[in-house]
Image (cartoon, rainbow, N blue to C red; front, side):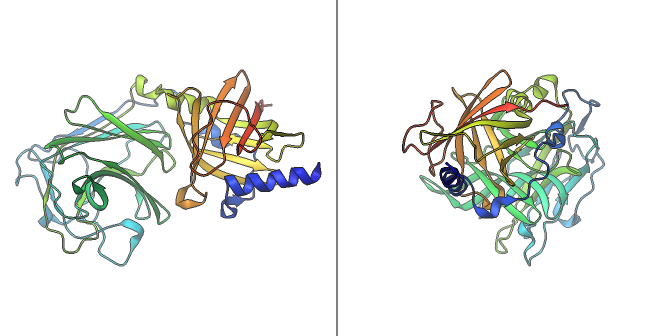
Length: 383
């Protein structure tokens, strides 16, 4: 039996994680991280609006201001930022982005917010032309959601524009692309909705009905500054064009936004869970190789004896059964791992598809050779 346990432990480690991802666990019973899920009520309501009608009404603090490349009169009723060469991406040896208009976060608490910008008549023609929103801690830690022309993203008609959600953490970055069919709309709203460390990104062509493209974890839920930017990125030969910002709004979350279903679901998962049973490819093991799962706001710590993996997770609660996907920033896991899960009182069952690229299982059982891992867990009650 001992030999079998060691064999299944090795299989789980190889299939689910890479060795780079393992670290010493930081007290897997500690519920501190889970308790940091954003509060269920706002500490204070706020709304900040700038319509750029000939003046700046908010206390903007431009990063690397260049007055020759922004104007409130060039396009009346707009803040026009003329793009120029410069990029913060991974802080390479090149000029840094200028005219990043930033506001101090109006709340030091992790109470969440919605940032929306209206972008008008932005016509990117050259690779890396971009304009949009930014959440900013420092040069190596930021999140930006922009319209961009990108020659690494091909449409049926060739190179085309995208919505680009780029996050940088300690100088390393990841990019999430959403294709734009056809040309960039003449008037476009970009929105980031922040609930704790999760950021939902959405767009609209009328300012009323928004299409949510996804969500991504970044930061601690309280970025230092929030604002807008436009640049040519790292393309030194790109033509300078105007990004016309018609309005910018920053506000607190509504009760409906606070009770968004996926956010509520993460609250249900939050905390430590003890593994009660473990099956892999149809075999059950009394001495489960995995001992704990600790869910926090955007990450889960999976403990195997004296080692632990911290992975990011996302939920899809529209599926039946509900699904979760594990991944890791900067490729610390070998691809994504998909799973299905369900609650039953204080019990939680998760069935993982360990094979690369496999879809989440549609049933909670394992069979010989199916490459599935089924764990049942029991919530650890606080003392």
